[in-house]
Amino acid sequence: MEQNKLSVLVIEDDPEDYILLRTYLSHATRTQFELCHVTSYAEALNTLVEGQFDAVLADYFLEGHTATDLFKHAKLIGLDTPIIVLTGLQAPELDDVLMQLGASDFIPKDELTSALLERSIRHAIERKRSEQKISQLIKRDPLTGLGNRLIFEEHAELALERAKRNQSHVAIAFLDLDRFKNVNDTLGHHVGDLLLTLVGQRISRGIRASDFVARIGGDEFTILLDNIHDLVSLERLCSKILAEVSRPATLDYKQLVVSASMGIAVFPNQGETVSELMRKADMALYECKKNAIDARFLVFSDDLQARLHKETRVENGLQQALDNNEFELHYQPIVNLDDYRIVGVEALIRWRLPDGSLLMPDEFISEASRVGLITPLGEWVVRHAAQQLQDWRAQGFELTMSVNISPRHLLHVSFDELIGNVLQDYHLPPGSLMLELTEEVFVDSGLSSLYALSEARRAGVKVAIDDFGTGYSSMRYLKTLPIDRIKIDRCFVSGGGAEQISDPMITQAIVFLAHGLGFDLVAEGIETEAQALALHQQGCQKGQGYWFAKGLPAKQLTELLVAGKPLA
Ligand code: C2E
Ligand code: CA
Ligand code: CA
Image 1: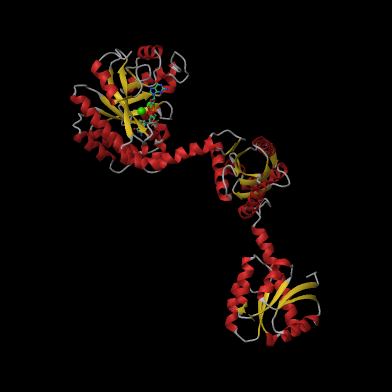
Image 2: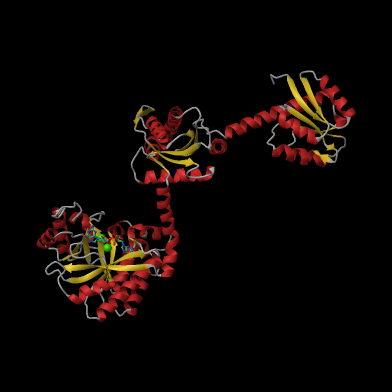
């Protein structure tokens, strides 16, 4: 220990004991002690708050208190000066208790010697210092040398306090590298580590002296941007950081393209607490990433809040919606391309929110699948559509009803049972109900899906491949699949937005294929007469699309059926 003059606070109410201590300490051989003497804990606490001491010597008993109280107070005020307790009695059991409370040492007064006391104080100080160093270390990210989450939060707390007092603005930003996993996977963790270190340095260069950066995990960095005056200067700052980070880099002789995205939340506009701001910055980052455009930043806003709110409402509301019967089916006609008469309908689900607005399936089907509600929802669709089909059949309309089945639902253990029951319950003749499944089911999901489909077909339903041409079905494989119909995806029909078919070569090829293999064929997304005519000429028998009709509520579709006219 290079420092040979140590200041020690002595808490001792017995004047004789104090004199004894002072004498011992003055005889110390290697250290010069500067003493400050107080006689009560209350006085001691005041002195501790005000002064800086290297160590504290405290008598165990002091005017109705014990050193235990001292430790509790020391903890409260965040004191980390080492405290050595002296006691007039031999009480070995106290030793453990005091050590647990954080005492650096515990010495019976009758064992005191000058050397013992000096050594005890010096060791206590030494230990405390290395403890502090360790806790400093664990507040650092060992790889980049930046702060870690813990210290970031500490800094952020202080910055918010300051901002509250000065009525100023503070921003918290999350920065995440784009496609960092690729770097790790293709160039190895060694290069990944180098990149993270480099990015840490670049961020540090991009920020102002008053800002603070930490790495809180993987390729995620957080930045505290203090004293933000307005949105424009915040955005300028973020652009600068991103520009600094997103420069090419040469690491380990390899050229790397580096880019990152950022999500930002501002105090006090978007949150009052550090954790709320961090959550929102993270959400903004997630939004940025979702759009898959590199090197972008997004400041959390009320708009984003509203959108996310809607998403959670979707999630929470799904189960309730099922219970409250908020779903409805619309039916889009499938027509014969010879005469434009309705030969079938496709059931398309909608969610009528209590406020009257209508959510489209793209806004909630994948969510329902994620939260495990696709099976009850799918069952609702199948039963509802079957009921409607039964009604129409009773009125004399010979139709095929198509329903969309999610791959998840198909894998449910009692899927084929459901289909069998439905056909029976609604007295539907074989082939009047058709299940539509996207190509991925036939490509990725393996044998259990195919088995479930074969079983359903045996029970008496037909099966269609939906959105055909967008996945990767192998042509060779196609003829062995348990299917009856192919639906040409609308991107080949009206995807280009032009009058004519967008991809006539592909539609023609699919027509040949379907004929060759003996499948029924429907072209989706017919939006113009030219497309309808051309598809008919290519040999496609059936079509569906806005040119004929959109998905309509049952009542309106019934009117069309009753009118019995061609749809165009
Ligand atoms: P899909 O099976 O391909 O259904 C056709 C979608 O294309 C429908 O959108 C329909 O309104 C739309 N559409 C029809 N004709 C045209 C056209 O001429 N031009 C354009 N641009 N679009 C047209 P919708 O109703 O929003 O359904 C979207 C997707 O949601 C459906 O795609 C289907 O995959 C899924 N879906 C719908 N209902 C259900 C359901 O009950 N269960 C499950 N699992 N999925 C469903
Ligand atoms: Ca469909
Ligand atoms: Ca489709």
